[in-house]
Image 1 (tube, one colour):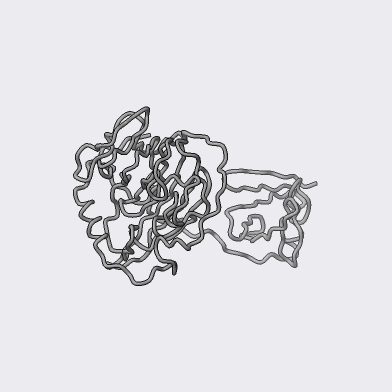
Image 2: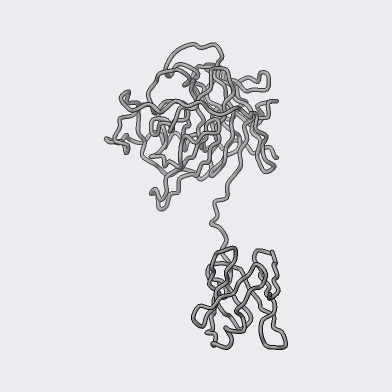
Length: 351
């Protein structure tokens, strides 16, 4: 694991304020009005047994390990005004949001949180906070256990946009987890090419399934997507409730396209003669070579696979890197087979 040590980018808050200053749209993409009390509430389910805390993997950047707030700051880049108690960072009412000193784009985020054990308030006034990817896209934190509130403001909602698929909240005071896969929006020529995309697991239960954010999330407003930096700090919300967070770690995800081979695979094909095909047909242990016209198939574990002849002894398979080589005896017939794929080699003798 590694710890972030980058300085808080001074341009981050300017970028955020520009994004949130855009005019509101007249119609929301969902057809629902934001925070509509008539919108159906998600089904309540009981999550499985807790396995928290979840240890970070070796390539994670640990943002909070229970000891201090050195990785966090306030909205001016000064030391964060939240407190650390019993291995958790706790929001202090009136202290403001906290921001990571390092900026992120595409990422996997793990964060554990707990609403106050003593229940006070109702609806949005009960255990309210939020996890803001890039400081713009909020996954709502709320005590949604037996707490009636609007659907797109419940725990795990992409706030004001997407209610959670289910309500998987634990009881007040119990530790809960969010595991979030976030893909930042892509902009080309000052226009949105791909929206931000979020997948969220709440206590191990998928509650957001690769949803595409309409733009930055907000209370009582809809903001059109506006170009912003590729990397911005993560932030946590002070909403006046002493919500606790612990075991916060993040993995940066590659933005590069998967590598492709420099050279195309060898798909050359020759036509076998009747005589050439006949020399190959037979059973070689688990491999069975069969005739198909003047071509041959490989029957392996009851699955018939077509062979592509590169020569009368070397074969490939369409759309796979497997290779098959026949060895021949003095009588001119194949007497053994060598099957290779992915570094594995299997051999078979003619029976």
